[in-house]
Image 1 (tube, rainbow, N blue to C red):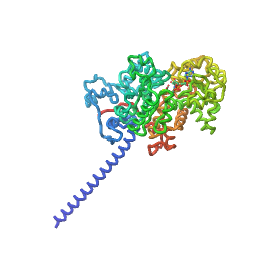
Image 2 (cartoon, rainbow, N blue to C red):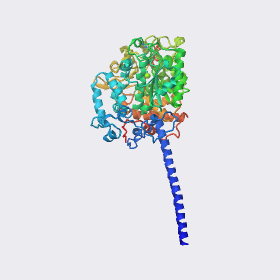
Image 3 (cartoon, rainbow, N blue to C red):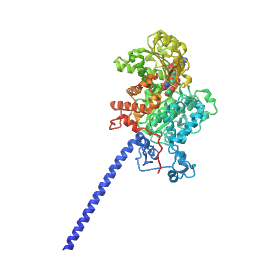
Image 4 (cartoon, rainbow, N blue to C red):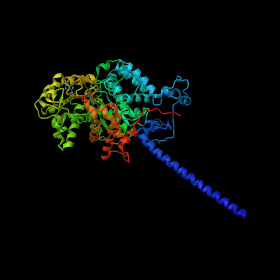
Amino acid sequence: MLWIVVNVFVLVLCFSLFHWKGKAIGVLKLLKRGERKVRVEMESTLKEINGGSVLDLDDKAGVGGGVEDVYGEDRASENQPITPWTVTVASGYSLLRDPHHNKGLAFTEKERDAHYLTGLLPPVVLSQELQEKKLMQNLRQYTVPLQRYMAMMDLQERNEKLFYKLLIDHVEELLPYVYTPTVGEACQKYGSIFSRPQGLYISLKEKGRVLEVLKNWPEKSIQVIVVTDGERILGLGDQGCQGMGIPVGKLSLYTALGGVRPSACLPITIDVGTNNKKLLEDEFYIGLRQNRATGQEYAELLEEFMSAVKQNYGEKILIQFEDFANHNAFDLLAKYRTTHLVFNDDIQGTASVVLAGIVAALRELGGTLADHTFLFLGAGEAGTGIAELIALEISKKTSIPVEDTRKKIWLVDSKGLIVSSRKESLQHFKKPWAHEHEPVKELLDAVKVIKPTVLIGTSGVGKTFTKEVVEAMASINEKPLILSLSNPTSQSECTAEEAYTWTEGRAIFASGSPFDPVEYNGKVYVPGQANNAYIFPGLGLGLIMSGTVRVHDDMLLEASEALAAQVSEENYAKGLIYPPFTNIRKISANIAARVAAKAYELGLASRLPRPKDLVKFAESCMYTPVYNSYR
Ligand SMILES: NC(=O)C1=CN([C@@H]2O[C@H](COP(=O)(O)OP(=O)(O)OC[C@H]3O[C@@H](n4cnc5c(N)ncnc54)[C@H](OP(=O)(O)O)[C@@H]3O)[C@@H](O)[C@H]2O)C=CC1
Ligand SMILES: CC(=O)C(=O)O
Ligand SMILES: [Mg+2]
């Protein structure tokens, strides 16, 4: 009997144990599943915004520092499931040749052992900081800007994280080499200095198979494309296929200034030929050796490109149009802004940055925007884009219809002041600015009759703000605001030194390409850089992190206000109307947050739920160039 009781007891015990073990396993499984689900969700969020890293499970660099686009590399398509536990690490020689993962002499002994690097590197192990110090020393020894550009491009191709570390840590010093003015010269000589492709080339030859070409790009989870057709590269005109330097440069800034991960950025040049005779005759020219295709042939290639991009990367891919000539730029923007997430940087990004500078300058100038009179030299993309955003902002602030707020904004093009009697021959984007006035041929005369408080150069032609023009501004205004926006430096309407000396130090001045501080009458004047580089990285980050599907003008106004709000007392004291680029990542996070907030308000943001603190969220999404450790 006892034996039976004991057996029953043992059986019950076993059953219970089995039962509870089952339950425990179930619970463990559930926990694991839950954990995995949370992890997949989190990783998916990271991946979409910034890429998620599983390379380095010991990474202590935080969200930004720990993320790297491993999924993007592992997944063949956007629809393939995310597997955060799948790790693919190149090893040995190929690891050293992979710019995303290469750390050069910074690979530790353990990493060298584990990844078949022993013997492939000399014995020394350097910290990233020491590598940075060495490279900066080397870079500073080059006296020719183009050499510095090439050294930086070379570094980007070799060790991407070190490239971005240098650029972020020395942004003021290095921006002029990876961006304007040097990038302009690089485009002009791109054929001669070309060593490795840095972006995707889509030429007329690929018509009918653009999607196929897109699929050749090695990175799959692209979030932003900067595309040009090379027809209006800075103020240097048609550079054809060699305009590639611009999307490459702009996207480096997306990462360094805006924190978008490098592997999510795709530079594209659409090659429809060039009308630049010099290039066509240049034996080293890298593009199609033919005149530009126009009309239907051009439109069809662009249409195929735009739909292929959407098909390949989905609805939320951001496309930035850059340096298209104005006869295409306005039409492309009008056509695709309703169907794609696009903006034109030269029209809209520039408008936002210039409006910010003017708003910031009001503190010194006095009055409101509506109290001022604006005169532009140049009535193309930048000129009319800025003019329209100023008019819109005044209209929003005063409730005066935009048709009326435009009336205090005047533009001069190559034929003189835009006035209504010229209306018939005007391109459509100039028509809103054709006010009633007698014809005026010269800028100087226009300054004298219009009496602007703000003079803005967007002509692409250097030295057009002559001494007489600047002096005329100084005779009308106690503090003339003069913006020479044309790039590169050679095309600037006037130099900083000219602006300060010709106005006896009274001008508030900023330029598209950087100028050094100027000493005049014992005082140092620091010119600001009025360049869309302040806006597009933060704007782009805001759009991407909120999953926004369309760009709205109100977002540009938000970006502008966010930038203007970053100008500090200390900056004003130096005569600046823009904050220094040293703070650009903080500025970009603020811009991104304001843009995203507006997108949520307008119902255009698809990422739900809306993060509570958008600035913090933006910061947490940012790529940082800290090395991963490889196990
Ligand atoms: N700082 C920044 O962030 C930015 C700067 N830019 C710079 O602005 C410049 C212009 O760019 P964008 O607006 O796109 O170019 P566009 O070609 O669209 O416009 C140029 C305008 O300047 C006019 N123009 C040309 N020569 C003269 C002249 N001698 N006198 C008066 N007007 C003239 C043209 O007149 P017409 O119409 O009669 O031909 C046209 O209206 C470039 O140098 C570019 O680098 C552009 C974007 C951003
Ligand atoms: C800055 C810029 O976008 C331009 O000059 O075209
Ligand atoms: Mg541009």
